[in-house]
Length: 474
Image (cartoon, rainbow, N blue to C red):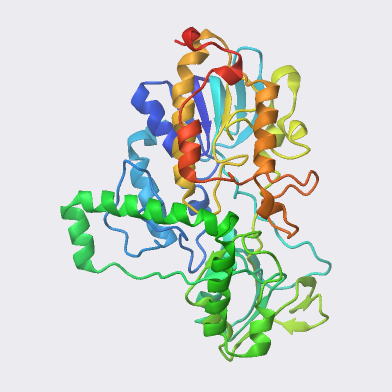
């Protein structure tokens, strides 16, 4: 049995950020990671074309610059390598291939059962992420060839000269389609709903630029500050008055890249701009114009041996199916493993949608913190900015746990949930997206403001929502 002050579950961006803060403060901790390697979503997603859609020099820890990124939007392999380097100082505290089986609050501490034995901890930090469990199409029939989700890519499947169906046109779909089209004999793309797509503006960094970043680190600091300001301005284009102009730019990009009126009509979104995730690509529209690529503006409805059938009745003979169909986002699988005060199951407490105060602490679950969970990601900026703020919140809360378990009040949590809902208009405007809980209709994934607002409000621990006086802290 392992006994520590803090148990962290997950070794992606959030878990590593938390581990580095715990190590700096001298806390006793362990990180449990079910995968055989660190990196979280960047460990899982290794499909052709995978890359960040936030500029690389903003999509990283504020205290660890990396001058060597090869492109403005770094390929997934480079992000994974960055995370491995960032985790080097805490690698000896990470237990790989260790899956959480259950976690129970016994009134004083958390008792964890894992695939490699038991762990006791005063504090539990869930850093399991929100994009961990692939959502595969549930349709009748059987396909007799390879079917693989983008997050479970099988590199042994040969796509050269194959007939490939890609199901889904979200963030991973528009990245993988151009790469598959370079190899496959034919590609059919099944589109349930057309996304808004903006030009990405990606490019390779010149060797001279990279060398300058290495020699003058202050240039990277300045670049990060510039990217932060520019990206924060995008918030108004997603959820504010700037949506009208941003929508016009997206449609102008479509018109420029797709002259065929029939194809352009099929690629024109039918939902309000910003309601779904806005995507970025310089290649996707061009790829759909290639003679061996076909867009089917209809969802997958059935499998047949050697074929996929779309909801419009069309049948397409293919050799391989690639599911770019996203993840279970609003219902997190880890919630079924956690029992809080009085045996309350987290998935039961979240049965009407995930909820937390400050997107980090949950009533009924003392000394538990959730990173990158309810309303803790962004539609316009780097999620790492949010993760760092949450890790700072946890680090500053830890001294208070010396006086007894911390549990946020139900009133504080409800007030926060109400605030989130009142500010989530564009994302609850009627389109089907992965931000809204299907049972409650609440928007449960996005912070409905700018990153800096969250960092200012919740980048440090405030004892008041826990019924504690400021003077009572350690």
